[in-house]
Length: 153
Image 1: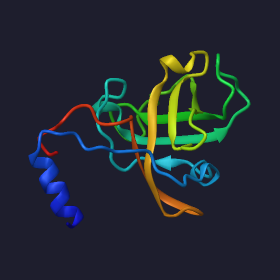
Image 2 (image 1 turned 30 degrees about the vertical axis):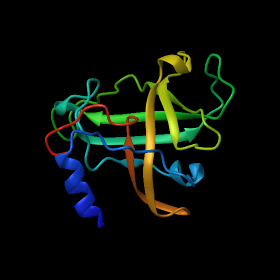
Image 3 (image 1 turned 180 degrees about the vertical axis):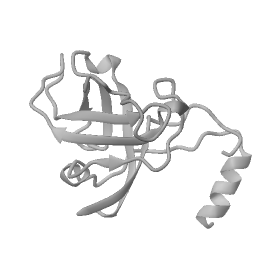
Image 4 (image 1 turned 90 degrees about the horizontal axis):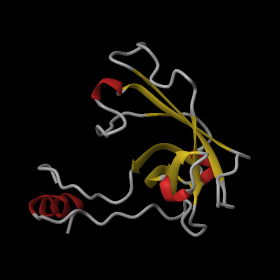
């Protein structure tokens, strides 16, 4: 079955697709440079008027997270409010902490304020990136597995 037929059948069903974070994730390559978002779904913490010039920069961090001893990445999010080159959404340069909680699946990340334990962080899954493990020029990121089914599947 081709991918387009599978996607079409999935769109007709009432089941959310089963997605998993990517395997063979190269953290060093993923954090090599800033990511510029090309398409993004509106979320409760980022409404439509803040989806201008969205970018994210991640770096290895020495910051600690309460009750967590694994790898932590600093996450700096940038976006403009209302229009390109408008006011910055992150005026105070607030930095989050991404926690790689699953050693065997480092693409299954939890993201949240550094002072909060993992229990209060949200999922940030890299579903796929490419074209090669040594050179990521695109990535698909999800806030964990889908839980809401939209009309387009």
